[in-house]
Length: 205
Image 1: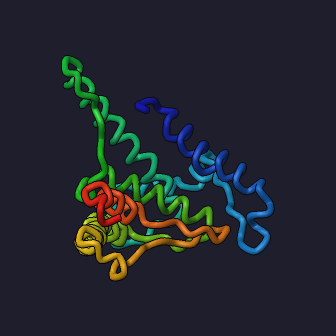
Image 2 (image 1 turned 45 degrees about the vertical axis):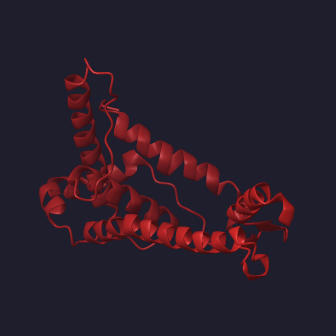
C-alpha cells in the first residue's frame, strides 16, 4: 500500500484473479449467472470521461455510479487512504502503536472506498449497485442492529437460565438448528448452565 501500482494490484487480485478462479468452478454456476471478472487496465481505459469529472462524482452522494465511475473512485480513495496511512506512520514512528485506518460511515475516504468496492463486486455478480448515500445508511444500521440482536438473545438466555437454576427443566426451551445432514446441535448456553446447576446441586441430579 502506498505505491502507484497498488490500486491495480489490489483490483486485479480481488476482481480478476479471484473471480476467474471462482468462475472455473462450473458446478456452482449451472443454475445461476456466472460472475464476470474485471480487468483494471481495460476498465480504466474507458474511464477517461469519469476521471475528468471526478470532483463532481465525489460531491454527488445520491447518484449511483456506473462501472467507470466506480473504478475512478476506487483508485482515488485508495490513494487518499494510502497518503493518510503514510502520515499516520510518520507521526507514530516513535510510538509502539501500529497505524491503522478503521471504517467510519462519516469518514469520506473510507466510505468512498467501501462504496466503490461494493459496487464493483456487484457489477461482477450482476447485483444492483447502490449510491454512497444508500451504503452510508446501511452501514449506519448494521451496528445498532447487531447490538439490538445481541441484547435480545442475551435476555432470552438469562430468562432460560433462571428456570435452569431453579431446576425447572420442563419449562426450559432448548434452542438448536438443523445442519445440512440433519444433525441437531443444542444451544451451548443451555448445556453450560445445566452443567453448572448440576455442579451446585448434585443431590438434585
